[in-house]
Image 1 (cartoon, one colour):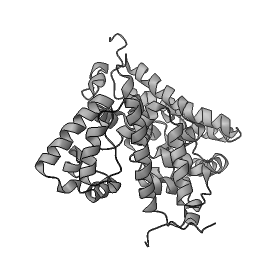
Image 2 (image 1 turned 45 degrees about the horizontal axis):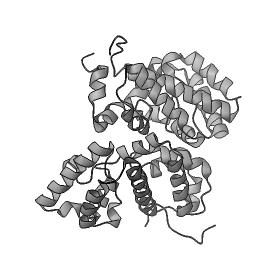
Image 3 (image 1 turned 45 degrees about the vertical axis):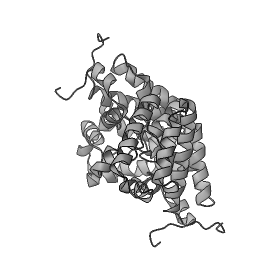
Image 4 (image 1 turned 90 degrees about the horizontal axis):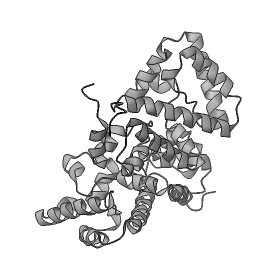
Length: 177
Length: 177
């Protein structure tokens, strides 16, 4: 907790420090933090989250697809190489993706490839809110959706991931301000 | 040149390799490359540039401000620490910013601070197309503009920087395709 920020400290950050701290709450997509800095003061961490969500909603569809494309495949090449961001590593571990059987790994790998080929972006799911069984079931089901449906579902998952990452940085003190 | 790509090779890249190659043509803003990948095939490097420009034009003003905030101060702290991206280092050197006198450095530093305080984003200029004298003159003049004017001018400068970075990656073969 020593490292956590109160919302009043967040509101005092200049944009460089703000981006340094919040630049990866949406994976590899610092523009989200960079865009909302102007909207200080934030009432609490949920207000900050809401501003980031609203910014993502304003992106054209190509931009939303771009947000998804900046996410790694679950249990993909980057995870095997140990090259995920710190946040993604912890999230994939929390879901138990590091304990998949060889068959489960194979299924996830193959379905990921089909998903990317169909939609042109990776399957994104809030790993911390799903165990590996739900993730494997989810990707098979979501593969049947239309691209428009998956774009929306993917962005909603990004928002959930973003909130959990924010809650790891900012103290959730709703009584503040 | 050995490392340069033809446009047909560019058009064959999967999105991960595309983002890996073009992720910093807009400084720290990989979403620009990630967003336009869908628009392949590109006729030539200028077509790719145009797609990135159109994407930036579609961003809400907060997003455009975010793009500017992801740029470093010219001859600022990051340059002194040697922490600029490779691209920014070369560009600032080409403008002669590494040969400023102490007085020039002081003027640029002070004016940068005033600019950031007034607009909430840094002064962005295509350093490769301007020598240090023009940059110093430019920042003093642009400080007098409105925020809306500077947002537009800054984004137009980002587009020029982007084209020069693209021309360092993709062979400019207008006869292709």
